[in-house]
Length: 193
Image 1 (cartoon, helix red, strand yellow):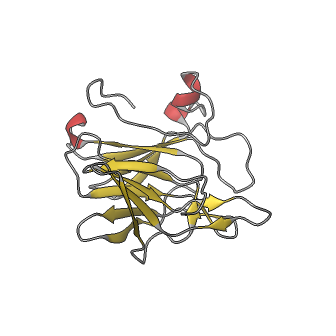
Image 2 (cartoon, one colour):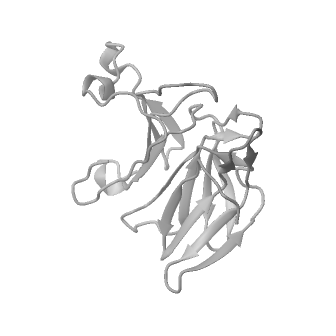
């Protein structure tokens, strides 16, 4: 196994999935394989199912932590080989193992956090992915304070970059501040991210 950085791990059905990442050297090496840890027995496996995100790092990943949807997980954005920043949203389905492109027109981000929020939280019962922070280019320092939302049923993106016409995002107004290289998790008990 290669030493990797800038990858995320998600937990689904007694397994931990770790996709891609990169090895930092003079020239970074990016990976396009998934390492899977089965909790019972602590055994590792490699899944190199094709047609996925490709060699990528610094992406966001999320799974349904309420276990309403245990079919897989989502992966968004990130840095590809050559420092291109992705806008794609992928879903990895566990059985049978397969990648599908869910959206190609999302926000251009890397180093951001993403959380799955079940439809039961919303009046329209539509599950959503929420994205926060990250940077918009490979060379960006700092981070953003924009919250993006992807409606998994309506297949549409919205953002909170200029809340109520004030030009100030709700995250900034709440004093959250800019973030990058962080994670996000939804807590079903408190219904908070």
